[in-house]
Length: 251
Image 1 (tube, one colour):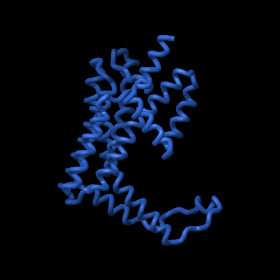
Image 2: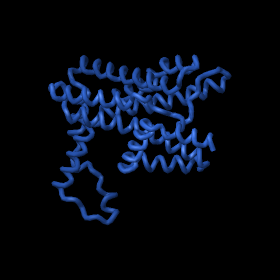
Image 3: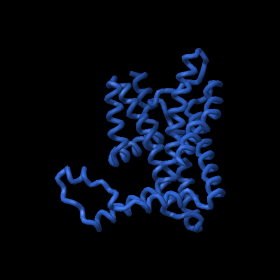
Image 4: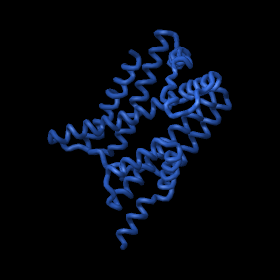
């Protein structure tokens, strides 16, 4: 039930914030950002209500659910079908414990990322419906033109410094804070990297479905995410797309 409520909050809360940008011709990506922030606030408020009613935090609920998972619940059939030798119970238990620990650490960051994705999908669907009805709206630009603000790098450094101080003061667990910050900044700069990939695909007239497949491979692998992160960071600092467009104009 709680999961359904959280999902509904993620879908519905961003809408009013995004409509203000959509209907008044403002920046669409800024509208998505504000929608995401409002969704995160709403989800956090829902967790606060859950805590006040039950006396347990959302992390307690997650721990309880994870603790019910045992190695007997793990489906090793696919692993065995690959021809690999069955894992020893101790190894399986270690894998399970690592999975549980990673899941607990990743929950806050995953919720924030999911709020961003849902807000993006919300904006795309609502803007398409409204545009078909004849309303003049601020449509969602192609991903290839997406760009983070120039001060994002300085802002990221400030956030890391504040996080470091917070951890040293014992206000929050260091592993939880740093893991989620790394996840969020990797995701954000990877989106910038994807924008560069889509820009080059558009520039070189590469079929869009090939660009989508390539982007998916990058985004779903550790090496690919690292590449996208670095590409996005370089684009923010050096403005690769702007330099290339200026060169093409001169030519």
